[in-house]
Image (cartoon, rainbow, N blue to C red; front, side, top):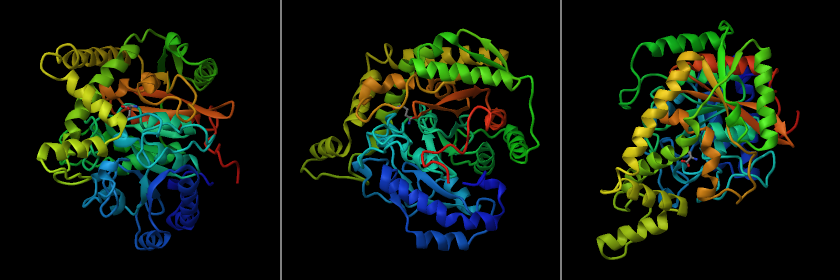
Length: 472
Ligand code: GLN
């Protein structure tokens, strides 16, 4: 493993293509990280035919992001045989700039889950310990990078990029809502989700985000102001080594960190101490909005899911059971086509927004969401960023945290989805051989600062070369 791929010239990157591909193939065979991996021959032809800033990047893409001509299953039987006829905006850009989509990665069904186990195509395994989950829902994309890949794409509705990043010891970014186009991302809960990036090195993160954040009028929630140019300019300074910030103020909550299991607590406190050593000023503050966010998130996510998934009726595309009458066909299609977790959420979401109950659940959750937003942004007026653990526990064993029992794992990741703020997972080393991480949450469009902090932490708080493969 060399340093960041973005800092090599095109020829050096091309030399790494075969090796990248072989490692990715291993993640398919050993950890079930891919639902579909393209053949090497077709990839090499595509790499040869291109020259651009992303040439040499073989990018694994989560299977809920549309890539023309490739399957787009969302980890579900419902879309098992569905092949996308078009490219998502980020895929468009990636291809135009010389990158190659290497395949589609395994994921929790319709991105609902945090362990990678609800996929119709079987669980993804954690390369640090195959008896444990790698975190989800972007499980395969995380594993691909953990196994010495350079970068991959995922989606983050409530932590699906940041959690598996922490559980596999890599970087995971959920950008500010409205930064990356969601055109071509199959919706789970669209008011919460963003396409996110996994990388091993901070400079690759800055580089990719710079190239993928081009404005797209097809996503009406994209931010179109000129702050986009400012962010891009700063990202460029980050990956060209010209950026700097100092005197940053960081808030943490002692009380929240003590909710984590013992060894995780210790690691997180350790990391905060070390950040002080990097010149960051640290303050212990009350973050009373974090714990209530979990129920607020789940109600909103389920309500949006129940509406978004209404389109899978077997009428237009995807799995279909023909059972004579229209309603009987729809009933059977959805009963068999969806897995248990997806059905649970559709039922709960329909209930929470139905007449007579919406005031008690959905509307209350929307008010709660506004309160969380106000509380968080007030803090971010006083401090430059917050630091939180990513997960209160180490990666669970397979089968240990499925369904509602596992929802608590999302307690620290859902806040930035409710509020739209950017958040970056940074690994902080191993506990008993298992990875853990922290996340930095910043003001809207503070990605350059967050990634730059990740860069400062490289080699000081975590080792970007640390890999479950061992050292080459
Ligand atoms: N675990 C959360 C959920 O199941 C978040 C998933 C995600 O970010 N896609 O809703």
